[in-house]
Amino acid sequence: MESLQEETALQRMHPVLKAFVCGSISGTCSTLLFQPLDLLKTRLQTLQPSVNGSSRVGMVTLIFRVVRTESLLGLWKGVSPSFARCIPGVGIYFSTLYTMKQKFLVDRSPTALESVFLGATSRAVAGICMLPVTVVKTRYESGRFGYGSVYGALKNIYQTEGVRGMFSGLTATLLRDAPFSGIYLMFYTQTKKLAPQDQLDPALMPLLNFGCGIFAGILASLATQPADVIKTHMQLSPQKYHRTTQAIAFIYKVVPSSSCPVTEHPEKSLAPLSLLPVFTEALAPGAPTRVGAAGGNEASVSYLLPSGWCFASVRSFPQGLPEQ
Image (cartoon, rainbow, N blue to C red; front, side):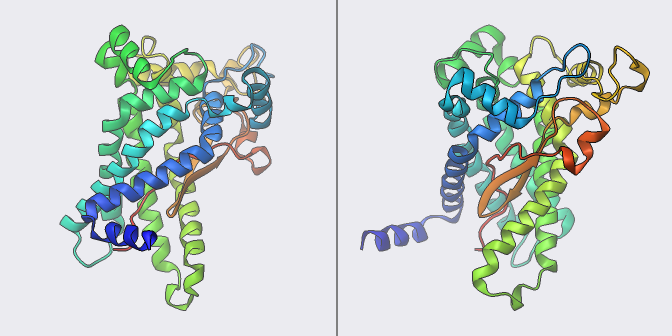
């Protein structure tokens, strides 16, 4: 009886509020489940290679290192700012996307370019609103800061770094989030159109949605991963990087090729690939997670080969709305 009443109350909600609540619930669940992988992603993105360029740290090695030095619960470090970001952030994304769909698209599916616009705009709005908490989350996960609470962290950042510190990495964040969501939504909607949905058993539809989401997320990740690495560096060291170009220059110069160390052959270093230490953010609607792969923190040709990949990160940020 109670469940029926709850269902009725949910159906009576304003559609925008309903989208906000559903997005927030899904973001909460995925954040709790996959926070350890998000922490590993942040750590892998900020690891520096040894002087001789021979060190190679993968996800499994890093897991054991975190558990050994910080205990098993250390894998969930940063879960409180993740909740503080995802619960309202995913809700903002969903409600913004729903509002724009109702305003610009009436009784029809979006075209490819319209999907890019909808996804990018919705994610940009959510990303800007939640950026201060995102900065706190990244710093918690890095293990370099001793913040006691999300509020305490925000207060400390504001007092020591001002508003600039709270919004550090804004450009890189927008260059990652907006294109990711736009590209993802475009590939997701176009892939679903190609699938013979009328011939499938309704019970298989969630599996179809999941598969389309994984495919779309992988393609979007390939395009936006460099911006994610830049964002992480800028949010951890805002005093060091005042501009996005400074972070790019640092990553380009510091991270050498594992197969050809800078100390031996600087002219042959594959530094541009250092922007790709962790491949992340493949996402599926209905199962709001991102998946990815990594082969270590050095930039080398072998990184791009399947044999060098391992499961690296799953992040919560659902894309797309339930059918209305």
